[in-house]
Image (cartoon, rainbow, N blue to C red; front, top):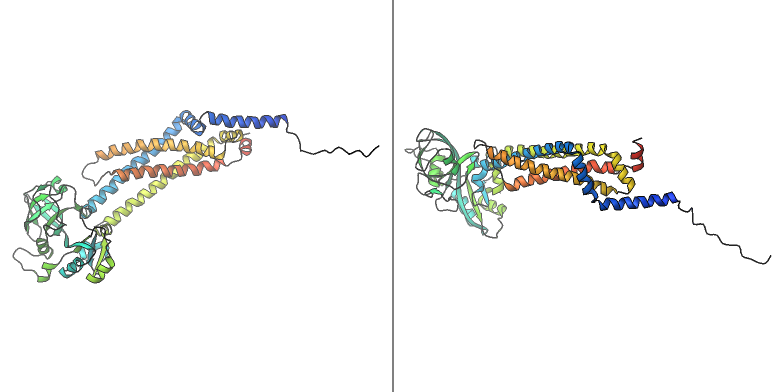
Length: 415
C-alpha cells in the first residue's frame, strides 16, 4: 500500500436524541405560552378567582387591621392636638426656660426674669422675644359650672397675642380670649369666670377660630400683668412681692427670616435652657407617655400585620407547591413565581386596605366629641402605605423560600 493518510475523526459528543430535542422545544414553547397568556398577572388573577373564599377571608383580616390602623392614627392625632395644639399655634421658634429646668415639667417649674428676656431680644438672629406665662387653674363660670383653663399670659399686641374669630381681641386687664373648644363646652362671650381660691374675676371677651388646648385643657389668653398676679397667688386686696411683677414662665423666641437660631449662644448670654417648639411639646402634661404608648401599639400592629400576611402566604404557597414545581419545570423562572405571588399579595393588600381605610373613616366620623380624635390625611395615608409595604415584605419572605425549591424534588415529593 502507498503512504495513504488515515481518516481524521472528530468526536462531537453524543448527538441529542429526539426526546431531548422535543423536551427543549416543549419548555421553550411553554415559556412563550406563559408570556402570551399574560404572565404572572394572569395566573394571579385566576387563582384569586378560584380561591376567592380563602383570599376573601385573608382580605377581611387585612381590612380589620386597616380599620384599627385608622382609628389608632385618629386617636394619636387627637391626643397630640388635645395636648399641645395651644403650643403648636404659637408663632415661635423656641422657648427659653430657667437654667437647669427639666423638660418634663418646664412649663410648671420655670421662672424667668425681665433681664433674661432683654438678653434674648438683643440677639442678632432673634426677630422678637416676649415673656410668656403658662399656668393651669381651676375656675367656675357665673352659673357655677366648673372650668379648667390653661392660662397663657401674653402682652396684648405682641406676636403671641391670638387673633379673635368671635368677640374682641386681647386688651382689657380682666379680659380672656378662649379656645373655640371652650365655646363648644358651653362657655360664651360675655361670661364671667372666677379663679378658684383667689376669687379673681375675669370676663370672656373673645374666642379663637380653632382648637387651642394644653395638657387636655382649654387655653385662655390673658394679659401678662394679670397673669403675673394670678401666678403670684394674689387676691384683689393683697400685695405681691415686686419680683413677681417681672416674672414669666419662659421666653418665647421668634427667629429672623432665613436665620438659624443659635440656642447655645443665647443660653450662655441669658442664663437659660432653651428648646425648639417641637421639643417643648414634651413639657405638656402626659404628652410623652401618651405618644410613646400609642407609637408602641402602632409598631406592634404593623409587625402583626406583616406576620399575618406572611403566615397566610406561607400556607398558601406550600399548598400550591406542586403547581409551582410544574411551572418551574415548564421553564418559569424564580423571579416569575415571585412576581406571581407578590401580584396576588398586592391585589389583596391594596383592595383590603382601601376597604378598611374607608370603613375606619366612617367609624371615625361617628366618634363623639368626648374622645380626643382627629383624622388627618397624611397620617391615614402613611398608615395605609405601611400596611401594604409590610404585608408585601411578609408575603415575599414566604414565597421566595418555596420558589427556590428544586422542581424535580418538589414533583417527586407529590408521589
